Amino acid sequence: MRVLLFTGKGGVGKTTLAAATAAELARRGAKTLVVSTDPAHSLADAFGGPLTGEPAEVDPGLHAAQIDARDLVDSAWATLRERLRTALTGAGLDALDAEELTIVPGVDELLALTEVRRLAETGPWANVVVDCGPTAETLRLLALPEAVSGYLARAYGARGVFARAAGTVSGVTASVQRLATHVDHLRGLLTDPAVTSVRLVLTPERMVVAETRRTLTSLALRGIRVDGMIANRMMPAPGLWRGAAASWLRTRRRQQEEVLAELRDSGLPDGMLRAVEHRAAEPVGLPALREIAAELYDGADPLGGAGPPAAPLLTVSEVDGGFTLRVAVPLSREAAVDLARVDDDLAVTVDGFRRLVALPAALRPCRVTGAEADAGGLLVHLERTV
Image (cartoon, rainbow, N blue to C red; front, side):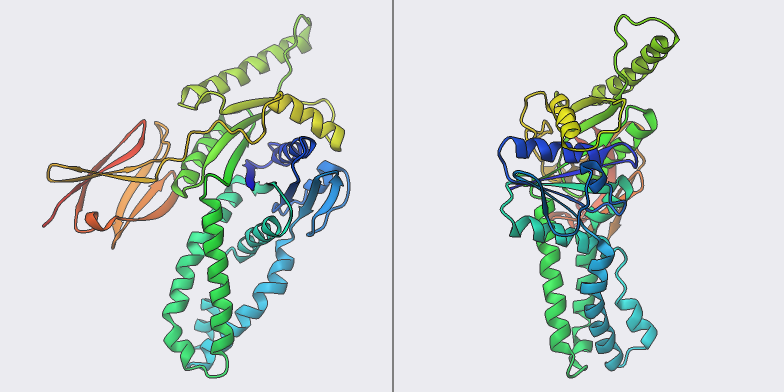
């Protein structure tokens, strides 16, 4: 099974391109599910018909669903949260402290991801295409499995407290263990490059491209592979047309091509960036989606992403007096990078996106002496202290 996640800045057309890709995969004979975690619920609009949280066939071999995260929270999380609160309060914790421990920011997005995984693994799908929310929400969504793992570690640290709450501990422990298992499976699914990859959708504008570059870096920090980028809403070439409208089209098209040329020159692999022209009419319904897919893939396999093979996030090399640690993240010349030691972790922050990277055992006694950026990412220098 392959999982393709489509995301991009709000309003760039990611839902349409996700639906078009799913339609093309199904046309080629592969059973395909397209599912939306976007709270805007625009996937149904793309197909021109209603959708629910359960997959419905919209074309032979093609099913679609829209996940309502709030419903999942109401049905799944509320019970566990109440059990945790009761256990903690019964063990002697202040009621306010117990309430704080049972609040997990972003739990609705986490449950949406869990539901995607459930749908993917319980159906006959060869491919699952996910229409994610806008970029900022998606980055938070994809960071949640790691963040919640830390939260659950904190909860398990309180097991001595739970043990004093007779009558409730077994239900709490079983529920927390199930959640921990879900989180671990999610993290494994998202970071397996043979299964999951991301397609970034953008419009050819400098502000949007700048955000896309930051997204590339953030996803690399999470160990999630990006295998393609799609420039949507390219102005059509005016050909031999004349007049003010044709002049405007030529100027706008030239500006867009300049922006994409700069993006390609920043080190993108050949074939990584595809383009789709703007439509005069809003693309709604399967015929319009298939037309977009024909232009987008031009006979090529929609699963054939052009992104580089997933490199290890960390590579350690021994040098005189210490080590170098390679952190394989794409960095623009303008990237703001910060490093800090947090116990046995290295906190890497790039353009506001942070990840705690567990240092290999050999590097934990070392002191960070400097860092530099190059074509391969971030190179951290560490000195032996013993």
